[in-house]
Image (cartoon, rainbow over all chains, first blue to last red):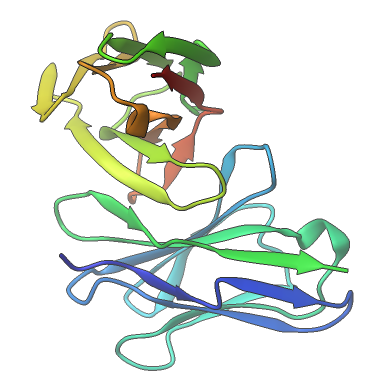
Length: 112
Length: 110
């Protein structure tokens, strides 16, 4: 069964450093998303991406964040200058025409 | 906000019993999806129910949706230890963007 994959599974970085989180969505899906979950809290929407552009973003997704689909398979989330409060689990997801949204296993980002 | 909110926050049951959890939301939706999350792990998609559907089944899972009450329920029948997890409802109001509730933590005792 096709699945969303994410790398790395765990990323440790120092405050102020740039990180890139990578995702490979399900191949025939058209909509791509990033969500995050701070430990013990709800899953929060960050950004949605369709037709090679951002379709919606939340208040969390400020100028420090960017997304890119550099080729036909990868979907990346970049955080330019990480802060302590960016520590969270980051989930990539993709949706096909049926509307079911499938999530990757997540990248645990720890900012020290 | 049209986030789903689950009830109860936590549920402890004996293996073999049924587990029922509820989700309420605030605004009109296209669909509602249920997910399972084992501690520290990813979100596993369980079932999607559309706004024009009232009930859906998948294996031991039964989901209902009452759009007039803006609520949904997830029933897990004949629970197993492996069902121990957190369960989330997520509502899709537009462009498939999901809004999640805080989840119900289910513990199945052997």
